[in-house]
Image (cartoon, one colour):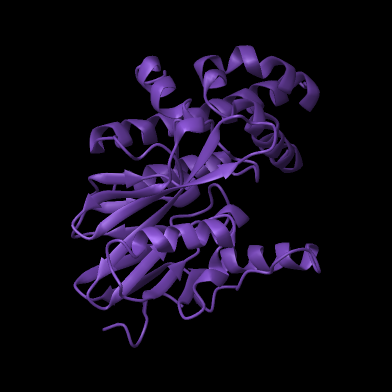
Length: 307
């Protein structure tokens, strides 16, 4: 399903003090919409991770048109989804027409059921990953709706006066990450391909592919690069672009760390033991302790199998 249109729609820590002031004060964080361009918003939601005092920001893209609303990436559970919907209702009473599951992970799909009348879209690989997760969790908790309309390379929506492109640039955080691109507004929502001011998450091990994917994305004509996690409110386009470059460097540092230790014949345990020192300033980023083992183990295990 290539270049498909949907019928019926008109179818180094950047100033360490700043990072700690905005990122580390997660306990005082209030979810809400953040205006980006005209009728385009980011929504900063919240997720409490086990063992972490800080609140992780879970970001959604909200596009408002005179024909309805598109949301890219929802929230982690129905309660947070209803909070998102409540914020949307402050700016429009029009229906939510589309949900894009840009990431297949539960912290972005857990609110799918809050929008029963919306069409859910995703990359084919994302839906596959979501279905596999539901199969493993059979009988546990609420089962979110799965995407109904899929694409492989690109899908174009014309919703009201907004051209919205769903683009697949390759594997990265997962094998099915969607970039939601509004070319006229010069906005790109990168979903979990980009965390701003948060340690990199490459638990599925695709660090090298992630770097290639980010390089391709950074060639787009974009002013606003929006992340799935981390800071958006109060950030300028230049700061968000710098955050993306910093995230790229973070992924590169993880890849280099693992390759270096594999070439030395070191075990995963040795690699993890050396990471605090060898990752330098990246080890000071928020949620490093939560994500370190997941990310390094993912890359180590994948590269080990390829050798």
